[in-house]
Image 1 (cartoon, helix red, strand yellow):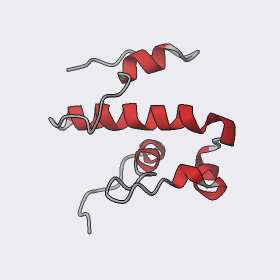
Image 2 (cartoon, one colour):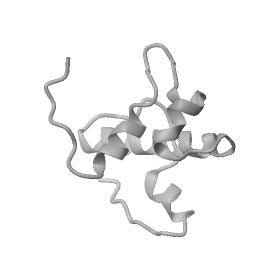
Image 3 (cartoon, helix red, strand yellow):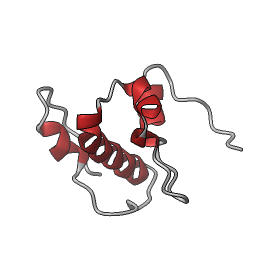
Length: 91
């Protein structure tokens, strides 16, 4: 059981997306319509959502001083492809 406080405000959405996969078992909530529904993810955009999830996970791990679980597209680079541009400091 985790003693961590819930993320503030709308960061809950990021928290929930990052936690849609169980790293121990590989179970991925994005595999089902029910698992995608809270995020408004259509079946044809699941790969993009997974790429975003893993980039977010790597950025969060880096913020906590941990390495990524696997190589990913850096979050800043990934977000630069979107209509909204957000700059993320790799440090």
